[in-house]
Structures are given as structure tokens and as C-alpha cells.
Image (cartoon, rainbow, N blue to C red):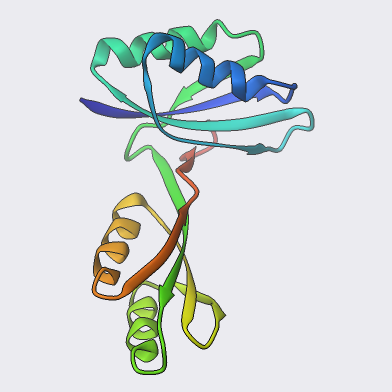
Length: 160
């Protein structure tokens, strides 16, 4: 099994995400992450999907996506030729006795403390999946209350 990151440029019409996810569902393909949002052209959106499977399945996914009416273009964001990022928000139980330890760990990863309460902190971290996974693993020594991850967004390097 391997992963592929698809960047899909679509018309921003009602139901476009439903049609894309329905394609995956009908064919039994797995979506590991999906993100969507506006882009540089009004009326269009950029959807980034991370899918896993064998070479044949991943090639079939690309062909099936290209057949959807709303899809204008598909680009595979290859590692090394693209930049990937993800955002995570993590709420950690952190009373006065452990708060400084959590803040120090966040500083090492260049994470931001975006909310502080008497008994918890909310931390924001942006980076590639490896960086985020490493940070979450180190926080397991503390009590993680909630985690929210955005999924991958990415762009190809250079002008193309």
C-alpha cells in the first residue's frame, strides 16, 4: 500500500464534495484525508485528497476523478516536488504544575499556545505529518483532552 496526494481543481458548485466522496465510497477506495477551500480563481475550489492503495487502485482513482463534471484538473502532488502542510489543535490538561513543561515542549516544535485556562492549554502546530505525529507522541506523557487535525493541504513547487 502506498499513499498518493491528489490536488483537484473543481467548480465550486453545490454537492461537489458529495460527488467526489461518493466516487470513493462506491468504488471502495479509502480517503485518508480530504481538505477543500477557495482558491485564487473565484467560483472554483481546490480539494486535496490523500488516498492509499496499490498502484492500480490509485491510477483508477485518478481516472475516475477526471470523469466528474465539476473537475477541471487533477494534479498528483509527488513528495519532493511538492510542499505539504497540516494544522493541528490540541487541548492538553495542564494545571500550574505541568504547564511550563507543556509550553517548553511546544516551543521546541515552534507551536503556538492559543488559549490558556486554569486547567488546560490549546496548542496550534503547523507542519508536515511527521512533525505533527512526533509532537503528538511526545505529548502522550500529558493528558490530551482533544485533538483536531485539518488534513493535508499542498502545492507543487515552482510555477507549474
